[in-house]
Image (cartoon, rainbow, N blue to C red):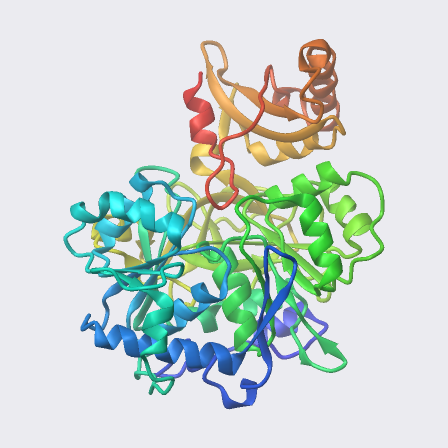
Length: 545
């Protein structure tokens, strides 16, 4: 927990980690007696009704499931795949794993059979917990997964062979369970990265990763509170199968005894999002850039005075000035951008309460994190304005332990005590970081290095643009030229407006950024390829040329 301060430099220089030898995520959240009768989860049902779960309710259900796990005779450190969206059963399943010293694997409930097979096979999962839709997918691949012993379905009423009913297991189990003792650096989860290059890799996270996240959550949310006069309430559209939903919202909130809203949506709906934020008087939210852009497209100019937000955090893709200004006008608060990745999350952040926000900056290092920029020769860059790769000192509790059964990739990621992110940025003379893009996304055109984010931000400022992605495509003269894939707001009249809109966009980029940064090629599309976490898959766009 961060000490409340109004000065970033004091907060950063005085911060010290205090990680105990023994630590368990469940013990630090749902097992805390002082939280027992507080609301832990407000589950928004499809019929519009609300279902309230106290910390004690979650604890008792997790105890029952942990007892059921033990009854199935799967060993400690067995892997448990959780193929569910935002719902109470997801949180209960993770907590039961932590209590019984299993390793949980959050898996996106919209994954197809190939994606599920790869992850379940790679992790050698013993148990899968899913709903009826997930069950149909798992049944297709069950025979090819020799390590998978049981499927637990939350929609199943009765047990049928290896397919077990979630509710029946809980009915037959005791709600008393003594949480197993774990060391702080014992494995807790495997979260698979989206895999910008090659197949997905399983990042093995320890229990202490939750403690490692706390400063990086408090900074963008300007210190958290679970008591009067400020009682925070969190929600995010980010799926709990992603580190952004699980470790940026659910688990840190429960560390503080703060309630979280859950909603089992299949697709992001900006209109529903505005209604939910307003109806439930959400105080804090993590809104990924894609969600913000869709909300802006739905509500581009009008003010919404019914919101009660105190803080908004965002990360994953850089935000532009236009989107940040829209946030102030419509959401009513400044958006604090932050940076991290599955292997080492929340290491750089803005915080309007502690430092001025700077246009285009993702902020400064989070207290407890040592972050530098390194060049291709392995030398640290101290001069402002020169871009290089972001590296993080590996001796931080937020860092992953290793890639699951992939020592080669682990050694490439961790070099001489530093974690290499593969992301490029530069710093200014005040220590603010500015994100440029992933190594594969940087465009070399006529000798210039161009990050896609800046060009995308400029194009997004055009009110006729709903979404955009910028990539480099081969060119015999310039090496690469810049191409923009644009989703227009008016999809019905693209053919009649595209020539005019292309010229407007090209001229805007030339005048606002630089001549060498304008997109020489523009293609209008209906949608952009996205990862399950809402990030644009630029490598798929590069393949189209």
